Image (cartoon, rainbow, N blue to C red; front, side):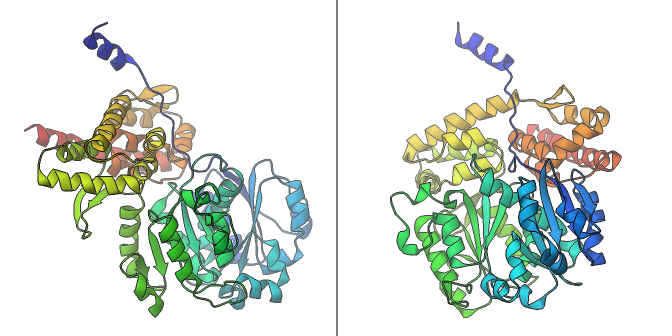
Length: 488
């Protein structure tokens, strides 16, 4: 068979699209037991924004004790309800249940777990403790984050057979992370999980699988804990370490992460003077400063693989901003030239490969298999460029023949997608949208801007179909006009 015949045969082959789903186990049921009307009314918020979840409001303790759920369950209780609840019995009857406390108690809002549990022992019964009030932590503002955090914990701790992508938040005060989680989830969507720890020991256990720094083994630390899955650390400076409730353990934690996981970008959420020593190696997020949130969004998108692939020189200046693997291949072509500029670019790309930057970006843009192949990358110079190009060009070819299946119909391009959005079963469209499958496929196709705008859109029926069609139509026109201009 000639090469031309082989190419023709390969072009006729289709490649199955495997979506990147972060949480294989989805929360199916939310049960609310609270006398506070603000909390009870969050049923409507969840019904509108998480329509795949069944939400019920319980009216008495007897109903609470007889809960039985076939799927993953989040139980949302206030202080009084948790004090009454027999959570041990509930957990015995339900395999996958997360108990979340929404507390109105000001001391609980700003105290580490040991203080809270000593004064209010009932708080030990909850997997999570969140703060709520009538202003910045109003229940309707935080409720989606509560449910999502429960789902993340369930999947990371009990269903973590696949490689995960985790934002680790370290802070001992429920009020702060209750405020911050909605902001963070609005940035990352369904592309990564969020886990939070409240003490130095909990953080070490999660990252390294040990309780003391002296137990970290430089030879096998990668195989213990979840550190290899963390793509961003967000930490306070002051939180409990041992019996010291106000230790500056955040400094120790940042130093450990930068020593063992230098690829992990670090955000220090603090206004204290102790952050000064990290200003050149971490992003400083002043707590309570709303003006810093826009900068935070840009930092997360640019440093965790979620946004564009950013190539910087040794001084931190942006050399290239890459949106898809087609543009990445063009940059690799540039680096293969016989010029001093190309040589410097190759050296920069070597450093990116050593830090797993290529594989992390590919993972976050739904190229799971390719991310596995290119992790880790220890090649150098022209060999590194050659290997990267070979795999990226192969993937570009595969993606051309990789349809998205909607209602048993194959979709290859944006025109096909629009046609199917208009005629497919709305329930099928809802499943694909709820699980970020549209955006995952569009990322693979190179439509990163469209993928970002569709991530995430939830709803049902025409309330879902109409905005999806409108956004796809807009970007289809933009892409067509850009292609026309490039041909001129």
